[in-house]
Length: 72
Image (cartoon, rainbow, N blue to C red; front, top):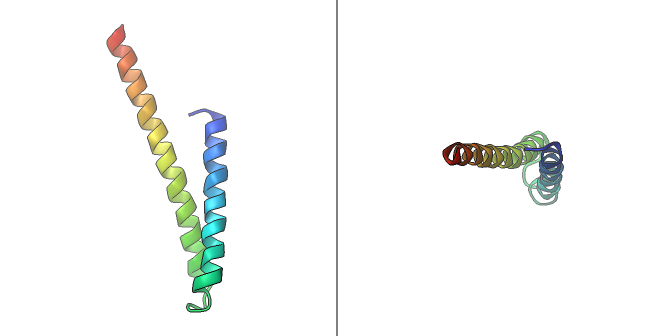
């Protein structure tokens, strides 16, 4: 995974965390009068998005390395 890919994945995970946080504030904050869980849910949403992209890139790199070994 290149630095550009990492930066792109981080940026979009941050955007997802902001979006989830705003949705929490708009719809769930009037029902659940506590912002703390919303921050945790938003951070977890962004973290999960980043982790899944990182794992997919790692698997792609491993399969690319193993297929190159078979060609030699």
